[in-house]
Amino acid sequence: MKLYNLKAGMNPRRVRIFMAEKGLHCETVDIDMEAGENRRPEFLAKNPLGTLPVLELDDGTIIAESMAICRYLEELHPEPALLGRTALERAQVEMWNRRMELEILVPTTSVFLHTHPFWDGRITQYGDYGQSCRDHLLKRFTWLDGEIAGRDFIAGSSYSVADITVQCALIVAKACKLPVPPELGNLTAWFARVSSRPTARA
Amino acid sequence: MKLYNLKAGMNPRRVRIFMAEKGLHCETVDIDMEAGENRRPEFLAKNPLGTLPVLELDDGTIIAESMAICRYLEELHPEPALLGRTALERAQVEMWNRRMELEILVPTTSVFLHTHPFWDGRITQYGDYGQSCRDHLLKRFTWLDGEIAGRDFIAGSSYSVADITVQCALIVAKACKLPVPPELGNLTAWFARVSSRPTARA
Image 1 (cartoon, rainbow over the protein chains, first blue to last red):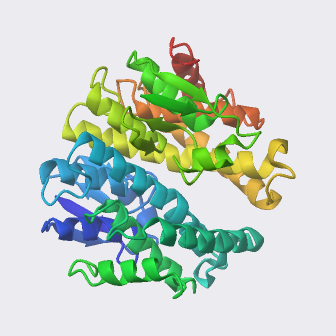
Image 2 (image 1 turned 90 degrees about the vertical axis):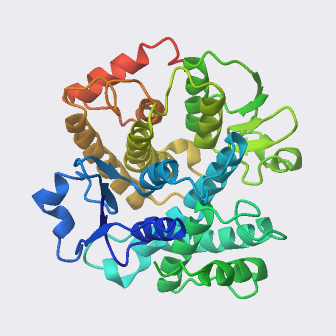
């Protein structure tokens, strides 16, 4: 098994933390996106979209998309469960992970693409739209702060993939000068809690 | 079991088709979004984000987010399998469904929000950004047309949730005057194929 990885990438980090939580190790191949390695024919033959991470199985089978990789690894290595233990738990973890993707991770990506200097000159940045994403994301931080009042983790009492999604998004939001406002006490405490896990820097 | 539904909604339609493929029926409650019913306290108590669809179990437990609902129903009613039959198949259906969400459904939503007259005056529309999403979506149609050459369905030889995702997105794209260009023969034939299923109008 081989993981094609982007060291600073938000999505590759999701899979690395997921694997670290399960104590899994595999060969890792770092792809240099700035040098265009993900756009070379040999990589596009593995994943025509050029995105990372990509998991390659020993027989050459490819699994792209972070959550597809996580789901596959969860089935092979169920402990500790990061996607829920029963049909209902799995549905609720999926619900929370989806909410975290749609309400936090997707707007964070838009903020990064449309307002971060890294992308200036690399893509067309729509600044007004990017600013609206910043405003939206701040509102979502406030909403999430209220939602998690009284519980330790995003989807309930156990650490799950929904936590991983948000902690990886918040690293990017911070790099876009949009840290969690300190007055949002629940979210601030949650972020400190998950960031102190030994796997957080995987 | 009760499904809170929005008749013309892209995501509620995904769940309705998923249920129809499995021969499942349940009480359906239509929510009138234009009249603001999804923003009323009684609905927000069920789903604080005000999004649809929402599944309410007999004990009052709520499952929001289309894919969380589909995953729950698949576990309770495995046949016909719409999320794959083995760990690897499930990973590959998830990969294709994610690709279809990220590359087709999400840009379609942006095209709808930022270029369709329905949203004029209801939200701030960023026209330049919306136009860039139209251009992007057309490129993705071309990419997908190439990917599905030689196969009947998006994720392989069986109809799956990845097909449902795209067929629902294409209905919205068409309403935004962005139909699949007829010269994209594979995608055009695929859309005719899935649209002729008895469940397509669920």
